[in-house]
Length: 209
Image (cartoon, rainbow, N blue to C red; front, side):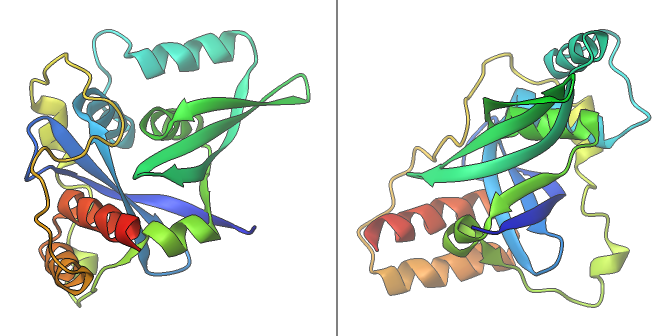
């Protein structure tokens, strides 16, 4: 299976669940987007890593992991999102020490937070993008907009310490609608840039198929 390199398109607040955020990944050579629901702490950590000029007064957990790895000459070479099961993404850290490569299991949000700190590339497999990727419509103003405009708000916001966990689903239940209706709602969510809702609808459609 071929690997597809991803980049971080942005982070947005969840419109349906308090404390949850939608991380939007984009394939570098294509138009497909991969929305992943993450918790508040992970969103904050990723946002801080994106804003390279900002340093917290004390190291976050991912910063501590980076310092620990540097001290013992461990490098994270790349991150691979390798599996999707029931709406949950599974990832691996490809690490190297003394030219020996090791693979470590990790939550996707943690893996991406670390990838940013190690300047490591992020990949997923083609079949995962085909199954979970969505297409976003582009317009002429896209280049003028800052896709990461909400990250500064996240850094300044006081987050709850409760860890919501990876890929938490909305508590509201989807009515028994047809797949055609769900696909229409998915298109509307994408157009409104409600990536968390789009991810939930995408997973519901995938389950029914």
